[in-house]
Image (cartoon, rainbow, N blue to C red; front, side, top):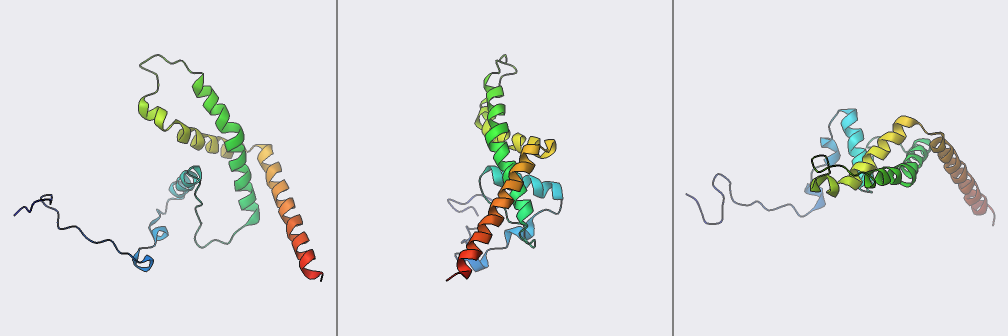
Length: 149
């Protein structure tokens, strides 16, 4: 009873819901393992997408530390890793495959983030403190101008 255009064992194609209200909540399906969730956050960060933490209030200190880590990772560690890979003259059995060359930048970005997290660079702490002090000064200046007529 195969119909033309259908694969055996599969039913007819289903229509995809068109309204946002009928889509399931993606965050409810996140795995409970904190390491997996952290890896997903890192991957979303590499793709330059924000990954919200459901149920958690925004913490300015944690956000400043995360932003400082990303800044050091992208501007300092990742270019060093890319330069190290570029200077490698590996022989053909050990040379990178086309797939490795394709995802080299993403791999470098992930490794750079892991290095910055594990190393606890003092530069990261300093940048986070500077970001917090500047944001506090900016908030104080904005509040000061709003109060004055």
